[in-house]
Structures are given as C-alpha cells and as structure tokens.
Image (cartoon, rainbow, N blue to C red; front, side):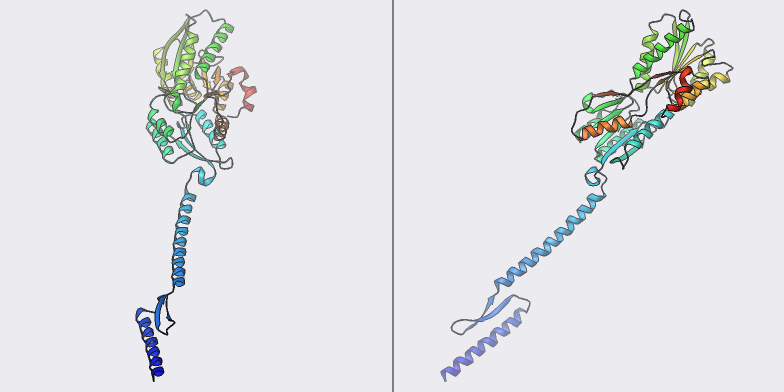
Length: 381
C-alpha cells in the first residue's frame, strides 16, 4: 500500500509542476526535473538564458551596424577631400571686369579640375569686398583644404584670415597684394606691380630719347586702376619713381578708371576737356586703354606710334596686342594672368609637407608695338 501511495505522490507532483509551467508561460526558458528522491521541481535553464542574452546582443550589434552605415553614407555625400579623395580648393576671385581677369579665371579652372585630383569651389565676387569676405568665411565653414584669394583691395581681410588660420586652412594670395600680417597667409603668387611701373617708365625714357624729345617738357596723364588695388598702387609708385628722375616730365593728373573700358573712356573725356596739350597717357590696364582710345578718336585727336598722344598700357592681353598692331597703343607691359599652374604646383608641395617660398613672381616682359604682330600668334591669352 505504501508503494502505491508513493507512486500517487509522484504523479501528483508531476501534474502540479506541469500546471505551474502552463501558468508561467511557454515562452520561459525553464524546465522540469526530478530530484534524487523522486520529487519534481522547476529549474531555470541557464544555457537557454545565455542564448537569449547572446541573441539580444546580436540584435544590438545589427542596429549599431545600421547606424554606422548611415553615418558612412552621410560622409560620402560630403564634399571634403577626406571623402572624395580630392583636394578641395576654394577660390575667391575679384570679378570678371577685364580680359585679363577672364584669362586668370580660365587658368585656375583648367588647373583645378577633377581629372587633376581637385574639387574647386569658385566664387566671382563682382568687385565687392563684402561678397569676397563672405565667400572666404563660407570656405572655412565648408572645411576646404586650401583657399585661394585674389583680394579686391589691400585692406580689411585680417579677421577672415584669422578664421582660416584657426581652422588650419592654408591661404594662398594671388595677383594683388594684401596688407594683412604675413603670418595670416601661406604665400603670395603674382606680378611685381612696382617693377611693371618701373618698366613702363624706363621704356618711355628710351622712347623719348629715340624720338629726340628727351629734353622737351612731357605732359603725362594717368588713368588709374581701382582705388586701393595693389596693381594700381604698385604701377603708380613704380612709374612715378622713374618720372621723378626727369624734371621735364610733368605729371598733370590721375583719376581712377576702375580697370574697365567704360571707366577709361569716361576719365579720358574728362582729361580731354581739361587739358589741351597731352603728350603721354598711361592706362593701368588694356581695357582702360581701349576706352581711352575711343574717346581720343571721338575728340578728333590721334594716338599710338604715329599719333600725337603716346599710349602706355598694362596687361598685354591678346586684344592689347591687336590694339598695338592697329596703331592705337605704343607699348604694353605684361602682367601674366596664367597663374594656375604655379598655384597648383605650390598646393602640391604643401600637400606633400614641403616648404614653399613666401613670395613667388610670374615671368613677365615688355612688348613694344613694332614687335606685336610677330609675337601675337605665340600668345596664350
């Protein structure tokens, strides 16, 4: 009888355990086992719990992997060199006021192409300094690798250059000079404007001697470039340094023509009304000279190698050569706009961790009218 009783007890315990499992739910990782004395108990399955824990960990890893992929996609859409593999360059250009400026822009765009390993952000600042400073700040915000600045005027860039320096972005100043401390930019590349002015003055010395007019009083007028532009300042200082050596050179007047044809035309009309005897006209770029020549002809006067007014110009663009060939301009002092390759070489050196010269000049010459037709076919701009 006792054996039967013990058997009933075990059956009852088993049934009771099954009922408890059903109550706690089938999703649990628990199991029923018998003790050595035949009692049935519920025991937690540690192995199952570990498996669940590992499963949960895998889910978390998958979610984290998804988030990483999202971040990678975001990085791929960025325009910086770290994601594109290209050197990101920002160029704040003065504007498009002259043929020289267009040639310079083209030179930069041909250098900083995707095929050459660059991404170029180009901004035409339309001769407005605020627009240019805003463009420079945007380059800093976009974390470009290098900034190229052709300053509209010499002053007023210190704060934005400090922004670039704090962001460890090298700034290369091109063409025009800048008054900011040299520690705020990496280097300057361009023309020696004062030397250009001196070359113009030395050409006039030689020309007047050849014409046997070196002892006569020479009345000289100058159409200046944009106020505050280093090209205008340098050319003026250089030419006047030579003029001061000659007591018979009379610097009658100078007014700004803003490096434009319309500006040159307007200033020349004013000069023609004010001065009857004009021997030499100095125009600080070709576009001003084109406008001035039109005004001279409209006034019934002549200019050029066979005319009454000797015209000196700067830039030596293709159109400047054509004006010399046409007999309108006596001499054109070169200001080389093809700076792109030299700037590109400088950036490649900096990218390789090499040092570069703080000042780098482009090669330039003086072209008299008598050689213009021969030289023009070989000109690149």
